[in-house]
Image 1 (cartoon, helix red, strand yellow):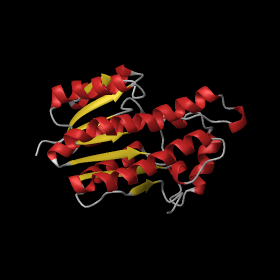
Image 2: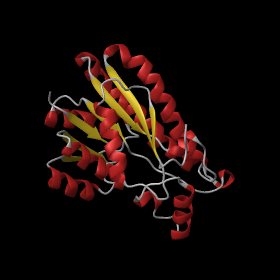
Image 3: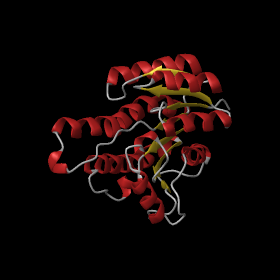
Image 4: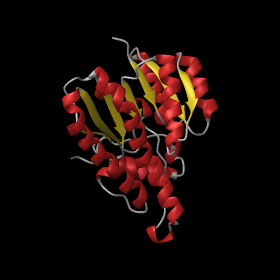
Length: 238
């Protein structure tokens, strides 16, 4: 069976690791990103993938992304919705525009990509979607209200789609990373990261590669659907 995957947010730390992980597992890899296309292109050259620019909050751009990737790869049997942004600060200080932007990327983008991917999967009676949420979607984080709420919505969407699409042979799962060594966490001080590591039962923060390994597992295990898998070192256990 030909295996092809489309990964959003592919220029970031987890996105690049996802691309490499799926390539190592034998997938044709389509890498989508909104910013830093050159980073995605560099990884794409390294692993034999293709990179595309796309703002996943825009319906027309999502349609164009899938059209281009399907032209290059054929059937996209796996989609990994990884793109995400955060905003840190008190809720009372958060402008409405920033709240809406967080939800546009973290939640609307997942909806648009799932909606565009599903018709072909339904026709083929096969497919896997892996949505990247966060442990803060399982348990809200102080000063990250919008991020926590948007990622919790991804978990709910995942479970609903797993119920809806199961009869068509399509699996939908959710991955919830913990504190991972990525540019998104670069704003945290060394002291903050050390404290988070100490609060993690395994005593360290995670790597993007460990998230990628879990994503490949969820994409490939034929009897796993509707699940929320934490990759967080035991920081949250549920």
